[in-house]
Image 1: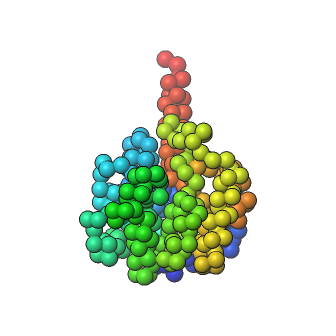
Image 2: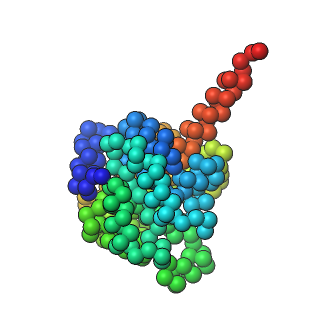
Image 3: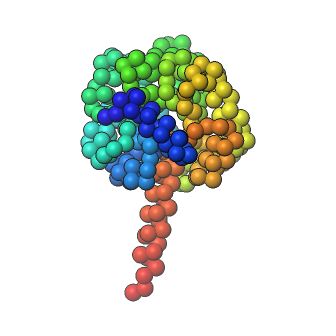
Length: 276
């Protein structure tokens, strides 16, 4: 486990060396192990990773088919934390979970060996009447903001998925260390979002710039990075990162699902090409 100050020092040293901050979502121990081997600055565990690496879309993590917080704790204890040697591991915490005493639960997250938290799953994905219903009945975004504030007050490293630019101020005021500009579901591969469902790279840059400016107005030291949408590979990440002035990229599907889909299929094809 790393303290908040230790995580921030590592990340700022990365930037000082001219390298972007790269975080990798891990739905399995082997994903985490080799993300670390590749130089990831952060390893993140989400309940969606369990479903993603089982061959399902990441949106499964938003559906009522499992206890999100319990899944993350189980993945951390039994799969990821035992194999990650020298990289901060961040827990995706469902801040709207009404069955947890959040202060007590965050204490368990720390005791497990996680170095920080991020708000996932998040109602930031939802809109329309369902979003209004959640906000009106005690399951609003304020619960995620409150969870991150409690974690920050405990001295934990905190990250916030920010889906809409106007949400950035509340997260920044809660004391988060890193703002993650969420650009929507990742495109590409067998179960990614369709290209028609996502936004253009120019629109990504616009959203990232606005989020960064709002965040910096509250906390000039906040680290702002990118996630999701059409950022399928290094080329797209570089374009949006340079255009927006953001500091790095947090990938999940891009780090484990997309590479796995291609590598396994190509390997099997290679074996099938062997002549009898």
